[in-house]
Image (cartoon, rainbow, N blue to C red; front, side, top):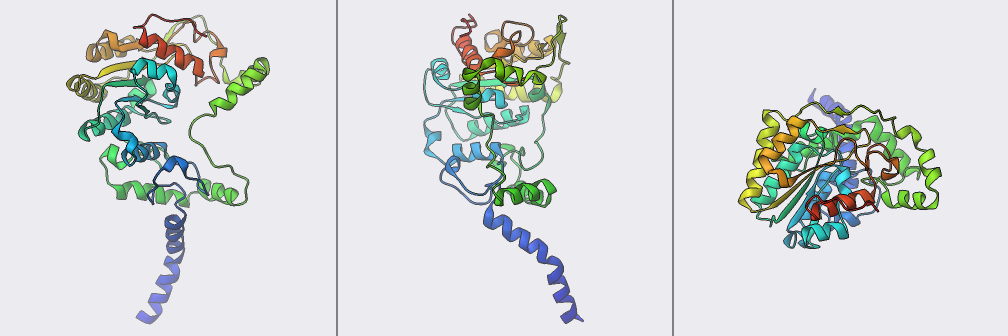
Length: 324
């Protein structure tokens, strides 16, 4: 009886064994094997977990030894870099640690990790919006779940999440198309450089083709719903405490969004209460940036020139320079 059962068990388990072998051998999300510089990896992989790749790069390369300033936030904070960032931080040794769909959980856990590992923290910039502030738990799915070194959860749980996603129809379809050469390697973030070239080539054509991405604005000033509750306050207090103990300069930047929704005054007041008035820079609501669609790539992401303008504003203590 056992002789008949074992072959059946093997046949039943064969698809799982094959998929497991495929997952380990191909490492489609670049989370199984170690890479000296994960930013230089090429090959057949689909979109990676940006939180994992940026953390791996920081922890396993010598770059971390020289960093003393950090940028946190969503993909919009990804543009807080370059000469303007160097002027603000007073150094070129900063690390842009922003990731798509970042959360308050992710920011607080990253700052706590850096503090525990003894990283130098002279300056910290955090890009803020209600969506980031609202989330105080780990993200789900292989694309957004936090690196175990950040979340404090087990590597086994992280790997299991990534592994199970290879059974999804989206993954199977995407990888099949990749093998057939019909799917370009996914890149994190928005191709800002290409869009800037398109704008420079024909600005009217660029924005006319994207008019649907810019919902009509109204004359009425609207406010976001307050989102800083007890859990959010505790995480923000943790960040403020670490920065205070480390004598770290904090910059909290509330994004200028095309929707012109002003951050809830109650939330702004709590941020000011924790970090001080000089650390909170509110660019939300109706202003010269949010009134002009030419300051955006689409309804969510502002352009590089606006990111530079924001950084220059911070460097001059809020005295806003001209938007170039």
